[in-house]
Amino acid sequence: MNDSMKSYPEYAARPAQLKRITLAIQSGVEALQRSQLQNGAFPFSQRQSDGSWQACHPIFSTVTVLLCIGKLLPGSDVQRAIDYVVTCRESDGLWDYDPGMDIPADSDTVACALAALSNYAPDLIEQSDSDLLLSVLRPDGVFLTWYSDEDRWQLQARDDAVMNCNVIYALSMMGCHVTDHTIEAIAKLIQRSTTGSRYYTQRCMLAYAAVRAGFDLTEIPEELTTQAMFEDSPLSVAQSICAGIPPNEEAIPILLDTQCADGLWPAQPWCTGEGLEPWGSNAVTTAFCLEALNLLVTTPNSTHDD
Image (cartoon, rainbow, N blue to C red):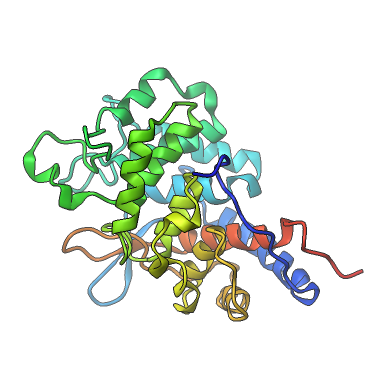
């Protein structure tokens, strides 16, 4: 594993692109601010069978926006989002992906919420929070996806590499040691996930989550790192750049050209469930795209025109 939480190569955007990238970031951040809901959350939606998107519970989108680009948002907006995350916490200490769905709490939502609090409200983190994540660690070193004692929720077929990477990331943010046994088990899970992960539609999301958790690109299946830039999707391209996959000539234009006139990027399928339509939102796509573009203008090789 890498010693750092994120290890990116030094990208060099062309000087002619830098001004456009900078403007795209500014426009995107302002649009994301405007999209923030009154309760502090960032919108989340589920795609319907007719192709439209319907608003749904926004806890997962909110913590995702914070983890992607909270550092680019004004402190007051970050605090509003953190306040929302805190209000969504259940009495057992967990977060539900969507209280309106008949499913147990999942490790992914809990891990990302705790990681967001660790980043922006560390005083709210307690020892018992890491215990919540470790409570779903199996003897084989892999974390269960669901907080449920029912056998059907504990099947290994429900294991998800992205979710496991997010748990490692959260534990690291909380200063909790992750054993070599667990790291090795999750590395093997990543290697087996040659087509991506169970609960995410974008193949690049696994590379993104794995690198953020500290894994090297060499530990990720080549199928997820060599073709990722050719999916012609801003969400996929953004995740690839953030994972340290060198962008090809098409990558940056894809990010810039798909930004909408209002400053946001279009909603794209991002995560999914068994037999369900996928979830995503303008806010989620925008957060990943802004994270990638910000990386391009903040690396040592980027030089501005005079």
